[in-house]
Image 1: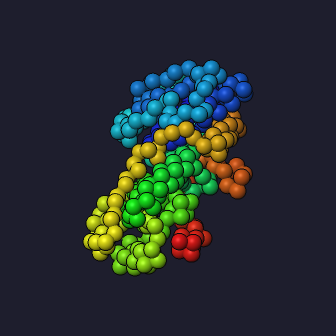
Image 2: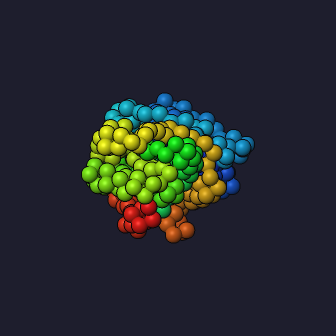
Image 3: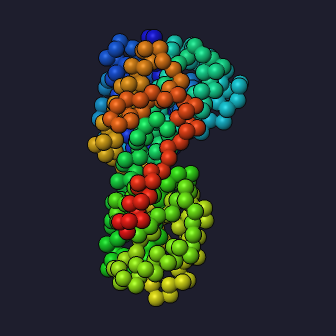
Length: 323
């Protein structure tokens, strides 16, 4: 292997730049050429390649977002598009690719390698949702939950001042990892998420119990993908039961995707990037680099995608007991 590429795909996540930096500098350290592929798979189809040097990734480890950008690519979903992508990679002399992204990114890589097995792909898990099997924390997750926590803490201050009921919506269309951990970290009263059923009667009972205890505020964390459709719909159902309690809805939205990555994020993303290059050099392909119990783990793309992370029963117990 003499030349590799690196790209980011799917939703951006804090820590992606730290991973890019590690990939570039590890490749150079081992005597490889490295190119940045702009806008994910679209960049491969368009042959949007830029040579990368150690200086190319200076002063980016602390930046959110991704310097390589991201984009959706409908062309890559077709055989014709993938054929063009293969031609571009071969003409550029790229032998291996580090793909930083989530399940869609790895699905695309797996299909591509079935058709063109002479180009190796290794993945680094970049998604704030933490929904990939084979790693304790995905790139972006730790920063996202810290961002959510800080925002909820601030909302709690004003909620305490006016004795209000707040429904706070966090990201999590398919999974509730951000919602669950931010609920525990902020001492919120309960959490609603895709993995659990939304029982309005039980929720009303929970709020009533806290209200009768004269709590200064009541905070309900709602993942955007919970079964009723998010915080606004839940609030409409519940608020009419509490006419004496002023209620508000706050949707945190894309604030959770931005901002400077945490220290843990930067270290883990750097570690994954380094190991991804080492895996390519060793001839490995079709795997995602993860960190499990503070050790590097290699998981096939198929397993990483299909065997999603499971919600910890212990964390669910913490919400119930500690509230």
